[in-house]
Length: 403
Image: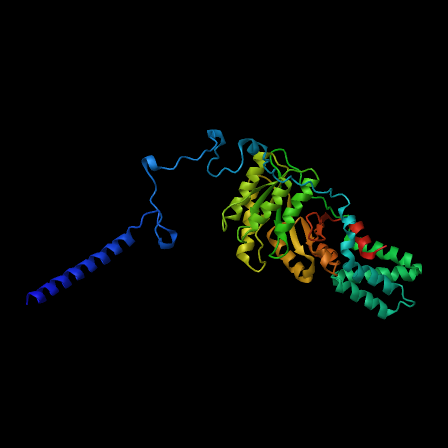
């Protein structure tokens, strides 16, 4: 019995001793010293904590900088470099080319009209036999070119008489006769002077009117260039408040030649803006005030009445010197209808024909003058800034019939 008890006690002691060895081994594995061989270190051990006190790493040697050498937040250049940076200058004000002889320089733009009127007529008149059928073709050519029925009949009758009486047959003689007759219809005796010189106490006032799509605002801007080229100082009035960006467009034209633009809120009262533009022109001592009015459809009576109101309000400052009607040369007879309605509302003093370079109907010059008894004073012969030219009858006719 005692032997059995002794064996059990010895077994318990052995078991307890073995358990102590296992626990000690596990503790040693968890607390390995830093010098333990790499083969038994954990590769995923967290980084050591930063040293403090006596164990802190010595500071790195760096060159010390003064406060002037430390760049300010957002600064990319040294003060000396900033002083050398050049601020871009404002774009220079353009100096438009002189208007004298501009139509002659642009005569090539009339090539399409020349093919229809001048060359077409000279080809017909140079035929071996000028019978009734040929003269009818001459009439058709003139009417197709928008010369108008009555002026066409007058021209053909005079040509037939002169050819028959004079016996003219050579191309040079026929060209001379045709030039004389066309020049008579264009009527060089009409007063085509633009009245843009200031009065003693107020500037000259020019109203620019017309329907939508004729290039009215662009024409106003180009007219400002014409006046500046001729030595006038100009103020622009953006009274077209119903078309989006019309005022911006006009202001851009003005800035290019140094002309101030008076404008108001979109949808504002056009008469009020026109009034303020003239007032500004008086204050600045300007020579001319150009007022761009809204493009009014001639079928809307209310809008046409408003145009009359603009003119009456402006006249409180002084007289309106010019009322220029802008017509699209490509619209033909419809342009004449527009002209008649505008003439009933305001006294038209001159016609501006745009897009004359893009039409084969140069005869509209003759027709519109005959219809209104008002001269064509300016013609647009392209999309360039200086493609608006004072109308010169002789240069126009010469361009139509060619050399």
